[in-house]
Image (cartoon, rainbow, N blue to C red; front, side, top):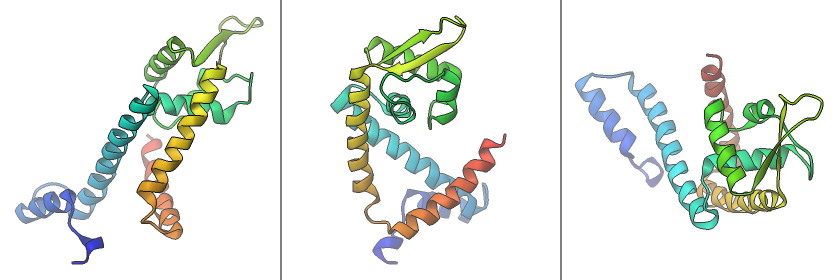
Length: 172
């Protein structure tokens, strides 16, 4: 077994499950186990970095970054538009909680329109836009560090396969 084929904890658990004949098919277990493991490792490492540098976490970066990418200075976005384009914050309560924390920190503002007081628009404060851009730079470095061992074609292939899987889960 080469260094690239070195066993990870998913292989070890999968081998045990396969040996005793329990659980899902080994290839299914290994695939979903690796997706769950990489997600947990990513969130843990990224949260630590964001907490140290910004006093924030992945969920808040998701919201700040999305607003930053979707708007220009002084533009605003509806909560529905925001929810449809964030990666982590898809549920209304989670998004509301994140927005509350970001508003308390002075990074976002919520305004009601004069035409329809029910409509809320969300925008970044100058501090929020600056922080989102600084977080983007940190995130870019993070990705370069952890994805450098993959070739561009491998990244594209993996992203395409994961997209197929995400679309299956998103249908329900």
